Length: 473
Image (tube, rainbow, N blue to C red; front, side, top):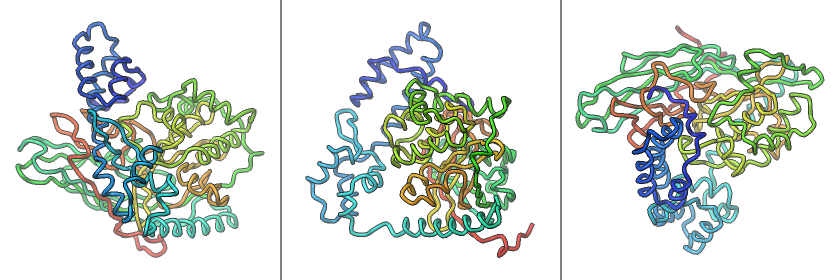
């Protein structure tokens, strides 16, 4: 299979298969898929690839909807002790609790709870204990942004407040997933060289027979191999330090220059199927948002402002189950950080603005987590940052809303600067995430090993300003 770009997702499914999937009749859908594949000589190759993938995609969809109504009710009751069945049913019917039929049974989306707490004011009011961790993180970030803006306005600095992070990441494969003696292959994300990340140092890696991808790899990884042992958990880990800094940019629209045709412009204003697709709807949407604006920076602001005010943050099913992420975001007007970033990138490119992906982790010391954002190119300022989900969270506070259009905080770990890029060495089977790489990837000769068979953990061991931290080689 090798690293796969999944362009075959642009091939629509035959209507009978799509209908059965929408009804949750997955067993029947797979039966019809196999019937199509039995006559593969008459299938276009792109449709054949799509149908082969669809069997895997169906299994992944089912893994995103594993909760029974009883399971979900009990989970929500831990947040709302006096929860009533009538309230639960009402929120289901109103679309606040995402669910679907699978083989005739109602199944609830695994991540329904945080979406419900964000979208349903009535449910949020009934919660007994507020999310204090989230409040602490937002307060920490606001204090940091205040300092960055103050320093940037006075000194005109671009890179501000460097910090040195020490990170430990582990991946653990459950026992007996792979037969004894068979080789397990693992790719963990690793920081890539970037203007925000000028220094990176590997401290240790286990097992010791690793392959570290080049520092400028679009999706940088550290690769391991290890033989499976019967009844034993397999563990892989990496520890590293890196310097990361905030970037503060103030752009004067009057100074913005027209783009010059060339490799950078052509590459970053092109489609990247299937997720950066110039569909008719997205073309019309871009025209509606940008209107008659000609200045590239102001065009980009219109796109950023529209997304942050119209596309609500929500956790979504795994990216590998979504056919076109940018279209998904524009149709549903909701999505997580990566979904919003891909919509922004797509609308920018349609509008003639070079834009690209960036991702890794939001590495704050209180509650780090995977995160995605975007970059856009303005002449003569170069690459600027746009964090759509954080900008949307801050849409009612102009200072912070504006900050995330062009500038960025220093709570970042950048491992990826493109989507769906090949690993070093290449993966042989389908990836668990065919877009991003934040959690890692695992496989053996028998195929990909999906998320339900392993766990990952990232710890921030140290987070200190460079002036307080003596760097020792």
